[in-house]
Image (cartoon, rainbow, N blue to C red; front, side, top):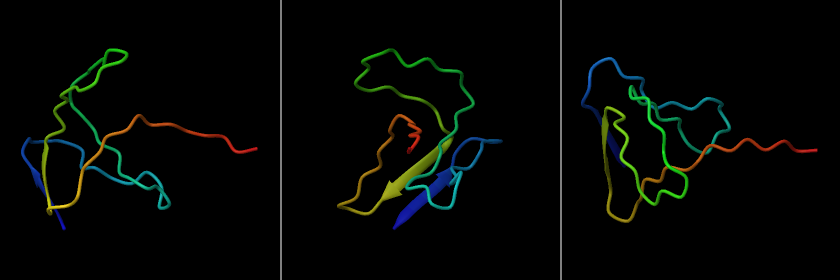
Length: 68
């Protein structure tokens, strides 16, 4: 089970861009540049997420692949 709480006002709720996406898009009200090679970086999303034991939350770089 995933428990999501909104902690900032006027934020965009994480959402699926397409019905076949494997994950949701997260949004931030901040303009942030993440340095190349950064191992960890905090970005305020306005949400708090609580996961059951044994689960993880992962943020990945968004990649679009073109299949030929």
